[in-house]
Amino acid sequence: MKHFLKYYVFILNNIIDKMFSKKILFLDTVHPCLQQELEALGYQCDLNTKAPRSEIEKIIAQYFGVVVRSRITMDKKILSLAKNLKFIARSGSGMESIDVDFAKKKGILCINSPEGNRDAVAEQALGMLLCLFNNICRANEEVRKGKWNREPNRGVELNGKTVGIIGYGNTGSAFARLLSGFEIKVLVYDKYKSGFGTKEEKGRMGKWENGGGGIYEVSLKEIFKESDILSLYIPLNAETKYLVNDIFIKKFKKNFYLLNTSRGPIVKTDDLVKNLKSGKVLGACLDVIEYEETSFESLTPSDLRHGTGRPPLHLGRGGRRPEALEYLIQSDKVILTPHIAGWTVESYRKLSMVLAEKIKRAFSPPTPRRVELSRHKP
Image (cartoon, rainbow, N blue to C red; front, top):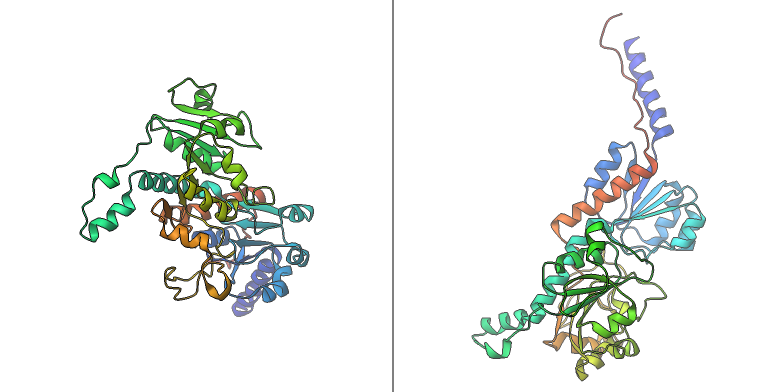
């Protein structure tokens, strides 16, 4: 009888699992804490970070949710096959790999986690800017080669400069807050926002006076007129692709420095190089460039100078680098990093924890109560 009861409880628990468990598919690698948090909520998590798109299309209908970065584009075709999908959780901020409008029409919630790496992106942008202003990368290389060049490496200060920020979401506002520690003027423009910011930030916003520091909400026209430095924090879409082109650059009254930690194709590289050569753009800090592969999951180390390994870039005919990319690599007026803004030990975990909390708030799935045999005699 006791063995029969154990078998009965086993079968009953399997039925409960099938009734209540909802499956979530991980298409990219993220911090394991996300899987742990979701499984604690009663979800079944399947990791499938290597299968090709064709295989994913065959199984996507089974899933209640998917976790992605950028390996597979969630377009109309795959979303049409996802008959039971209720959410797409994107680890990070960019949503260009998801057809968000079509997903919404199908009642699929699209979630991202810019809160998780906003501070890391802001710190990277500031670090790159300080390196550029003080010739740190060049000086470091020279000292290692036995050269002690002080005067050629004389830097410039942030103090007294005006920084223009386009895009005042999580990362743009985090960068502005970092800059508030310097005696500089920060001008902020966001097409889709107005009257934004915390009470503290709003207190610093308003019409500036000559020489005054602080953060100010302005028009794009004022960005063109006043900025010594331009930093971009905007998504990649049809409206923003090649936003920073020759016409855009020529609208700036001053010669200026450019920072881009958003997406590479927002800046037209040929036009940037043209204006670096002319001196209109005094220098550039680029964590992203337009030649990057779409997926960051499959990138492998390669030597950009010699072309060894699998290149993580879209190159020209015969695998040759475009002239504009060659110029960026060779120029000491340019700081380049391999899409690592926001790629810190801390942000790796925070990105997943933010997603876990958002999924929990949106769906709050109950953990099924399992049946147990009583240990007490009646």
